[in-house]
Image 1 (cartoon, helix red, strand yellow):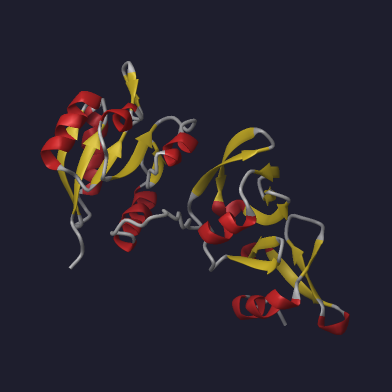
Image 2 (cartoon, helix red, strand yellow):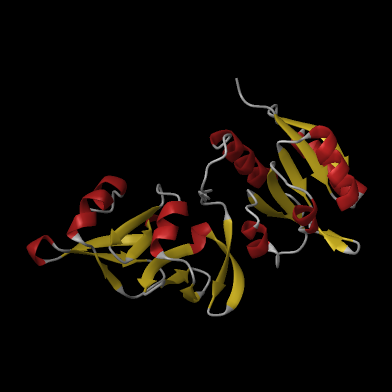
Length: 244
């Protein structure tokens, strides 16, 4: 039997709460037990209902959703729902499960609800497994961007950082290690082809064979040829029919 998540919706706008509650009504494992319009009423609702899941807005008159974490011990999973994208990094600093921009995309919500089922029991270290439909908030060359996962062509280790290239013209250093990318990227699309490079298989044009069983990948949208390490070649063969 699937777990039922007792859910609280916190937003200062009544129509926003109603819209979200309506969207959530199609999920049998989500039971909205209460709603709140500010931090004070949210605290009261948490103490009353002890929810498993909280959908939390960020901007309230004179306060923010982050103030809730300073005023009460939150054991529930928290998903931020906001019209503002500049809070994404701080949202994950407080171990939020997810971060939505308004208006909520129903398909994106479906992915988040499925994740709740897959990770119903809390773990000591929270891992975020992205899907190809997700966006990830990244600092690239000292500026911040929402980057669609399916737009990433190639990720290359560069010391303690990684260089990212997307099909939207973004190219630069991020403060994520390669091993962090390995843990969060969907492995049905992203494959490590050497100790320092991960590629999106959707952007592989073809594989060029060389002498002594060597191979190079020709990628769409970028000019360079990528040498495939022998260690990772067999993995690529199993996961991509462009490999002869």
